[in-house]
Image 1 (spheres, rainbow, N blue to C red):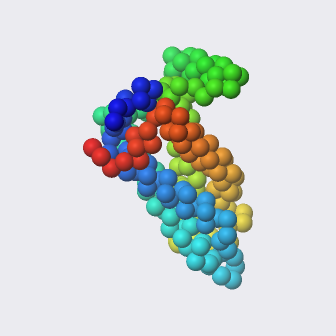
Image 2 (image 1 turned 135 degrees about the horizontal axis):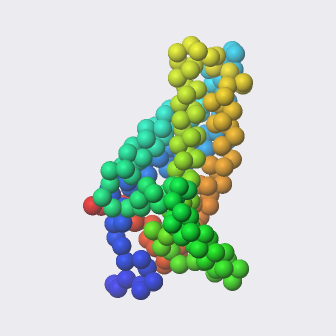
Length: 203
């Protein structure tokens, strides 16, 4: 069966480590968000219910996955460069980002979905912001866990800087996850890309 001409002809644009750590981080974040909808958190008299414990330990797992993914980005031999994920300190990359934003805006005004180019400036910058956002979410939760474990703070999260940051970022993570996953599925359905380029365990 032939490959549609408009599908990006790249079967493995990301290293296996990138795909594995991305999958682990994504699953941990989904678990975090899902448990946050119904869990009962700790207070001065109890340590939180079962869903909170799942939330807590999946958060620690997310921290490990985020750290591993950052290390992989620094060391990998193919995939988006770190400078493309964080373009804010390069005039050349900022110009490319502005041009890409204009291109996406023009396509949106025409009610069209822009062509998918995984190395384009805007998708790369958005991916970088998403990874920074989720990393901050994971790290703030991990800081809370360590502070409580060491007896530096009670399990009651109210008034803790780490938890203030954690809760403030929660809605942004929801927005990013829904938009990121939704666009990926839409591109897949329109034959613009394959989900397997990121969600596979091949070479």
